[in-house]
Image (cartoon, rainbow, N blue to C red; front, side, top):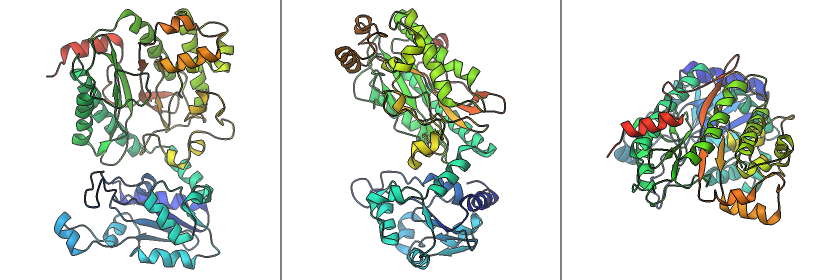
Length: 467
């Protein structure tokens, strides 16, 4: 938890931005796995609640009466039976005082507050957990199917504005997450070799996150089928000559995230064909450092990378025709069906629960939702100092997509389908790092760089083998 003053300052700014009414910020509850007492899923506090109220305990709601400048932490103190099983915890009043909130009250009070606020605006964020949706329905009479539409746009805009620009202490926290991410990725590099299963390496990688931080920042992707965007580790042994793609990240005890991807040769050495594709992804990844800076639209950075990728794929004979026309038609999405990156902070896809349109775009950068690939952009708005975004270009050879486009003739004037047929067994390559936008440019976060240049990867794998 940060200093008390941090949360007092943040709530004061939130009140100014929202302007009137009552703000409800719901914390999360426990999420049992397969029966009520088996809390296998770790308690993870809601990020916006954490940002303004800081406390990680379950069953809390922060209430801010903007009109009367009154703040209240709502929640029930635990009983003696809970203390027997889980130990003593601080009272809700104590938790409130730690973050500069003067008032506390039991959960039953929340209904009284909401009932008394009739005629005033009650602001809440779009709920994403069913228990909170039911609670909101009981409090405000809004059916769960209508709650996303009823969520407060002034509150959403205020939260997005504040959380988008990272404070120095937040950047330090993300840097700490990157340090854990370094250990995760280098552990994978040490373990990769033919015969070891994806699941074994994925489990070891997850264990690093749990050992040094709170948890993984998202479900670890580890697969020799890198063409599958979210390939969960299977029990399949790694095979000689394949590429292993590892996309993973850590979450610190303060719940700030890292997100990196590396693609490594199972045999320890890249083949010439793998190097040809890898070098394109590597160049696109590094190009972001040259062009991303305050005032530049990240959508423009994305398409600059797409043009570079198209030019390089034309050199290999996989694409053809005019580069600008090919990118405009979306032909590059055969190889890169996702966006260049996303905002990152306390959520690995930061604030995505507030709707990606609100987080990653503004009026001049609305995504093109009817074009394959471009419809998956998560970030396009103008960059500002203090933003943290991911830089994650990739090239993938997806057999089903190749077949589908070839059959329909989609973008046939820009694609060499005969040559693409020979890459159906290739897999995919992605390189991803976390980028801080600075006053005059940008830089990668993380004190130690996870190897990604081909020679560095090969040398690290050769000299750090683990049993």
